[in-house]
Image 1 (cartoon, rainbow, N blue to C red):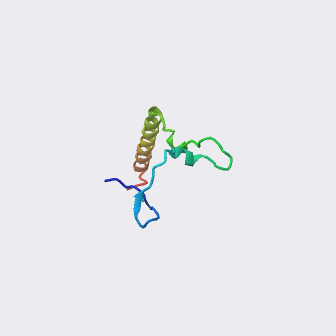
Image 2 (cartoon, rainbow, N blue to C red):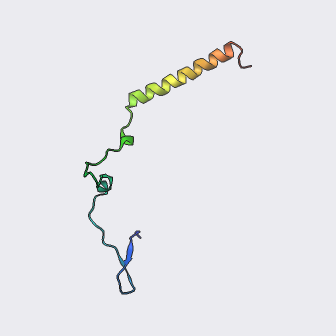
Image 3 (cartoon, rainbow, N blue to C red):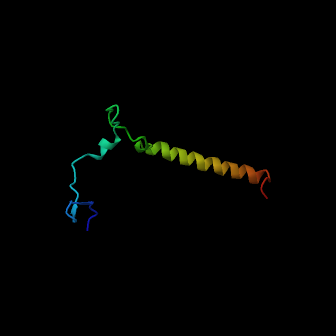
Length: 76
């Protein structure tokens, strides 16, 4: 089963809409200025090494904060 769009054919029946060969990227282009396709800035993944370093540093900082808090009896 597919989800096709159906349009009236003018005689009271419905017919599947013709699928145009348009590329979905054309909708990302500015029709006014005929600019090039816009880049998807969310698809620039972080390098694995940088991500691991970030989470390791965040974990070490959290651990140090907990040690400092319990060591100075701030949290009892």
